[in-house]
Length: 317
Ligand SMILES: Nc1nc2c(ncn2[C@@H]2O[C@H](COP(=O)(O)OP(=O)(O)OP(=O)(O)O)[C@@H](O)[C@H]2O)c(=O)[nH]1
Ligand SMILES: [Mg+2]
Image (cartoon, rainbow, N blue to C red; front, side, top):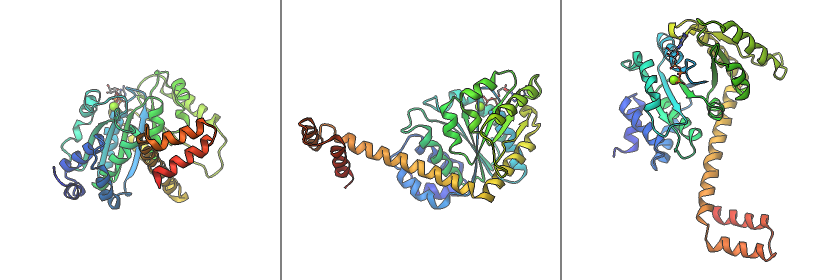
């Protein structure tokens, strides 16, 4: 197997094969990941990450493809991660994405990758940020993360993007779904796609109304815009890009971008630390230390908190 440092060096030059290999290491939760992440760390932190969520078939991939076109026109290198949290394998369900984005397949300034996260240790929460780092290090200036959204995964991916775009379409009962899934709290930009269909205005109005019902905003707060698009024809996409740039600018001015990234990093470190701790404690099952503590608890010589403290001190010391 190729060593990590040469893989990272090749990925840095934007070589697709090396990028693919590194993301496969992420997807497979490879034992080499620790080394990969250490090598990538100094190369990351530059990309702008846009999350796109929405119900199946709402037009996420079509919109992503149109956004790629817009960003390429602006001369930016673009990375796309199409994440399917419900599937244990990439491909399959995501085949349609490749078709939808195939016009960019031969563009060396675009890297598109499908990723499945079910079965991945820690799931989406772990795999996506690490894959994002690979693309970031490979020089992608904009990274679009498309998630087939069902409830929790949408919220998860929203917490990993700098800007979250929530896509709706008319006539899909999206309004009610949106409220249920808590989507109204996660969108920085809302897009009503398929505006060529009846009901787009009504959907936008309903959404506007529902967004207005939330907590009252202060003057400097971000008010999520609602943009209507016909992604299949590229209509309204420039307005989406404009809304994204506005949100990014707003975040940068107020230090929100740095804050979001710090929060994200904190949650990631926490998740890894807790898992590591749990693994170590798990290893103690049947261990004499735990059994001795349990004996003392059972006999009333030690309280459970005291025992837990001793156990934690024992595995971390
Ligand atoms: N009428 C109309 N159809 C659209 C528009 N945008 C996308 N579609 C169609 O809607 C269907 C689904 O589009 P996708 O982009 O695959 O939707 P998706 O949200 O990525 O779907 P999943 O990844 O399966 O959740 C395709 O047949 C598109 O051609 C639009 O603006 N108007
Ligand atoms: Mg799709």
